Image (tube, rainbow, N blue to C red):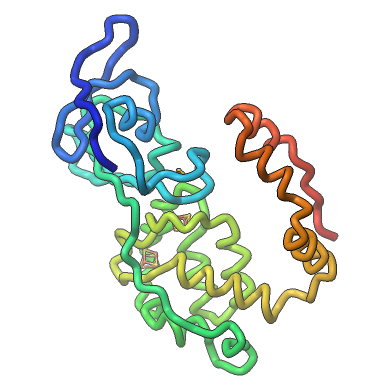
Length: 240
Ligand code: SF4
Ligand code: SF4
Ligand code: FES
């Protein structure tokens, strides 16, 4: 993220709030998200911004306000600016990810395949800080506990909505890499635990054949409000 323009002037037509970006003061319209406020202030995102809709996890942000000692964390595209906010963007979370070959992590052949690759999960002190930090309201501590019990499928289910933002890991006193571990659980579940799906295979083949290229192009070019509406109105087929 680099500043193009220093915007420090108030606008009389709209209520303004004061924010600090890496220590520099800006006045921005109230009601903007942190992401749009940064852009209003003249910053251009080259990293740390993706979907702008709370789905990709690219825009983790740490902030505090003057009257509070606590550091808070959230997604920049989903959080409104507040007066007196001090902001730092985290375009990348430097958490270690275990390396493995998916063909060699059959859960039946190991006592606890997740624990083998992420031994730090045994240090969980059940403080629930990770769950409180999650912008997706995922029961993060519960999926860590499921992993500890060796219940790969439960870990995968509970973490299904994870967007890999990394906010759960920042304050974990046990230094656990929750989201990398849970991603492994989902991969193992897909590869070894869930039944083979002919439908999925068919869909992958359709994608490979380019049958969705035109639809994808339309969506990429779609206006954001129409895109949101399309997403909200999509068909969701219940399992069973
Ligand atoms: S923050 Fe870390 S130690 Fe605390 S419950 Fe979550 S995983 Fe366990
Ligand atoms: S589980 Fe962690 S990485 Fe996943 S969405 Fe929640 S805070 Fe982000
Ligand atoms: S930009 Fe994708 S979650 Fe914020």
